[in-house]
Image 1 (cartoon, rainbow, N blue to C red):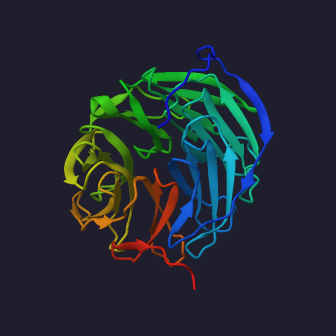
Image 2: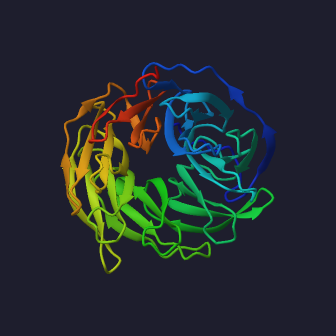
Length: 379
C-alpha cells in the first residue's frame, strides 16, 4: 500500500477541489483470462455498470493513481477499458448512488492523499465527471451506502492513524460533512458494509490488524451506529466474506489470517454475539476471500488466494458450518484480492483475481464442481 501522506489540511476540514471531466481508454491485452490494469492494482468490485446484465469490474490502482473500469462482453472477457485519474495511492473502491439520478457512481479511498474521489456514472459504463472530497488523511479503505435512509449514499472510512471509523453524511450537491466517528483499535484496516444482523440496516465491519480482532458497528438506520463490538479473529486478519455457513438463518463471517495462513470461520449466535469457529490452513499469506456456491450443492463455499505461495484454495461448505479443503491450484501470481461473477454467462460462478505486482486482472472460469481454470479465449 502506498505511504500515507499528510498534505496540510486542517483535521476534519472538508475541501472540495472541483469537478473534472476526465477519462482515457487504453487498448486491451488479453492472454487467456488475463487483462491489464495500471500499476499495483489493490481492490476490485464486480457489478453491472451499464445495465446490460453482464459482470463489469472497477479496479483501483494504488501505484498508478488510476481507477480502471472494465466492461464485460459476456464471453469471459471485456470490451472496453477506461482509466480515470485518482488521488495518490487509491487503495479501495465502492459503488453507490450519490446524486440521486438512478445511476451507479464510484468512490475511491485515496490513501496517499487527503480524502476520496467520487466518479459520477452516466449509466452507460462511463464515469467522466469526478469530484475530490478532501480533509481526511490516512484513509485506509472506504465504503458507501445510505446509512441514514435519506435516499443518498453516505461514506464510511477507516483512518488507521486516528484508530477510527469516520462517517461522512451526504448533504447533496456534492457536500459531505462528518457526522460521527468511532474508535475501533490500533491499525484498523479493511472496512466492509453488510447487513450483518438482517434487520434491513447497513452495518460496518472492520479488521484491526495489530490486535487480531474484528470490530462490528451495527447500524441504527439514522446515520449512527451502536458501540463497537470486538470479536477475536486470530492474527493479522485481512479480507472477509459473509454468508450463512450452517443453515441457521443467521449471517456468519469468514476472514483470512495472513500470518498463520488460514481462514477462520466466525458464527453468528442466537443471542446476537459472534463466536470464533474452526480455522482452516490454506497456504502462505492468504488475502482475498469470496463466498458463493461453487459446486452447485446448495451450500456456500469459500475461495481464497495466497499472495506468497501464489495459489488458489477452495473450501467446500458442508452446510453445517464446516468446510473441506480442495487441493491448492498454482496461479503463479501475487494475488491480493479475489471476487466472484459469471463472466461467460454459463450459469457457473467464475473468479476475478487481482495480481498486485504483475498489474493484471485474471479471470478464472468456474467448472461447476469447485474447480477453476484460466478463462479460455472465445472461439
